[in-house]
Amino acid sequence: MNIPKTSLPRVVIIGGGFAGMALARKILKEDMQMVLLDRHNYHTFQPLLYQVSTSGLEPDSIAYPLRKITRSSEKCFFRLAEVKSISAEENTVHTNIGDLVYDYLVIATGSKTNFFGNESIEKHGIWMKTVPQALNIRSLILENLEQATITDDPEKRKSLLNFVLVGAGPTGVELSGAIAELRNHIVPRDYPDLDPNEMNIHLLEGLDRVLPPMSEHASEKAHEMLEELGVKIHLNTMVESYDGHLVETNTDLAIKTETFIWSAGVTGAPVKGLNASAIVEKANRYEVNAFNQVNGYENIFAIGDIALMQTEEFPKGHPMVAQPAIQQGKHLAKNIKRLIRGEKLEAFEYFDKGTMATVGRNRAVVDLHKWKFSGFFAWFVWMFVHLWFLVGFRNRTVTFFNWIYNYINYDKAARLIIRPFKGHEERMSLDKEKV
Image 1 (tube, rainbow, N blue to C red):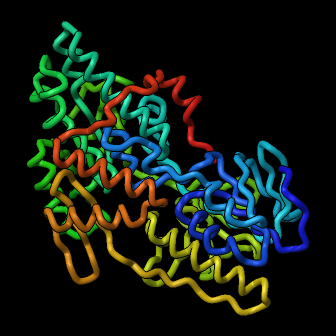
Image 2 (cartoon, rainbow, N blue to C red):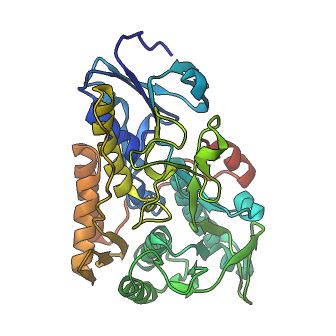
Image 3 (tube, rainbow, N blue to C red):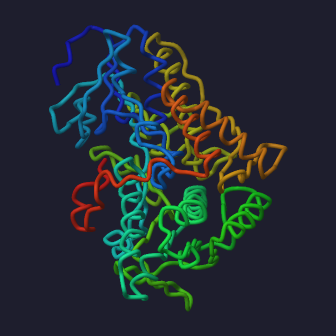
């Protein structure tokens, strides 16, 4: 890997997501060598991926070069690499570009889409965890609209204009709301030969309410807002199969569609090599103690979505969202410094700052500890928080002006088919989620 030999402790971080980046930024100036590994050369602000997929933002607005983090220190390095496995006995990471010995290893590989064993959905569906996948969704939506304008077959047009999203968590709610706004404001102007009323957005959820992780108040308000936008919500409905054209469920509902978006869950993305006892099989996440040490290892840590830290308040581990990942990354930076100095480690305590989701223009829901609110003020809070946590001044500025432009003009300027959507077989080979 062409990493210089050093007498300093070497900390290797696998993954440049929220957790890995938070850790890396905190140990840049410390007396240690840091190597950051990731299969992409950028950090993705995943909460705004849905805006890339619905033409609201370009991908470079929510991506940040990882080398911008490591360039400020001569002791820190980034390598574009895919980690294949870990040899804990030899303190070595094996990648597609070579092997690297570590003193301390931090696994921050995040999560991947969970299909719950349904092979037909994995084969024919489309999902959104990365920038390329968000661009796939954008291209597919726009290409289907283009096809709908030229087809003479009414059944084919109906299938092209049916949009089915599975999973009414924050991603599903935000994505379905954004597609509804695309239909309500963009389609009538860009596609005058299409009837927007023919375009149907279906949101399917296996539980009895939308936004299950949030409060009942947030669920009720989000449900109302989605219906106001014209989204058709199907609760207690689980998808049994999708063959690329027809969605079949556990009820009488069956929908013909060419756009099937899966957002029904995630699972951990572990790296091969550690003992099976280190992984909680059902969650596919590493079991860690209060110091984020992986079960059975003193110098291997896991943070973020891949880490399952069971506490009295969180018996199933912390939520797989950005805030626990950021907080664990910052806390582990302090603990690694303590470990190197031979000091006692301090236990991690998660501070829940609340949850929020946007449904569309002037519509959002926010759950804080004591306050729960929705509507325009919640939407304003949502925008402020997401701008604040975007990495880089340029990204904040570009995103802010894009939002202002979209708000004033009821427009989405990024509705470009930059790269055509690939067939399912080719797409799976190109964009398959790897560890």
